[in-house]
Image (tube, rainbow, N blue to C red; front, side, top):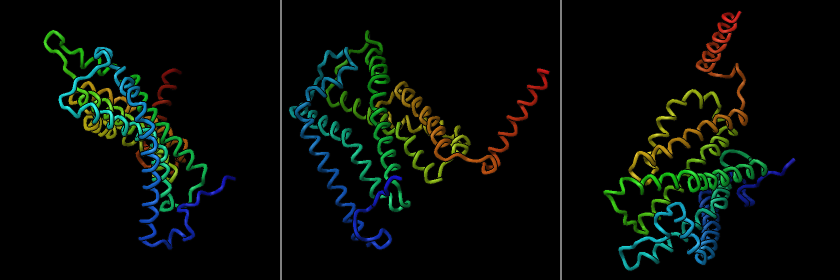
Length: 275
């Protein structure tokens, strides 16, 4: 059997830790994340040209060049790209330190559970960024830059384009975290598949509103491109909750039991008609 994750790594029991000790623990974990962040940022600085070209690949019509309107814009843009890359690559460390800090408050957690959670959350975040970059971003940029070219001529600046792309990809990474959050909630017994099914219609409305808020552009096309994956992630979360926290039929709420009864009646009526 896997060992238990001892959090926090101090001789004091969690219940006996004072406020100062909690703050010391928090400070230590923030310092670890900061060290990792700046170490990755230093390395990323030497690859800033490749990062720049990578983010421009979804927009071939720009020919790999962007405009700038201030003297300091080029170097500030490179610094922002470096910090953005460092943030993405230190996501696993950040998630682990966050979970290591809050885990004692929700009970003793096994190492296996922690490793699964961190791996799942990190993979989903990077998967969301990859999905946004390879699938959604090329379609969205081609549509937006190709809008009525006979009337408009684009003058795209570095801060406008790169700001749009980085926020767009970051939003997709956040959206893809919903199954990981559901995994934690289901593991703690807070979320079930019937509960998520019951509020599916509400979730569609909320996801649409969130898509409008998270989308860096004001166009409805980008909002739709983000809303669809959000709804799909909600459906994936239902599957995750079903396997992680299965609910017996007698434990379902009245609404779920009524729905199951109605479906059973429909199946019986269909069989009678066939006979």
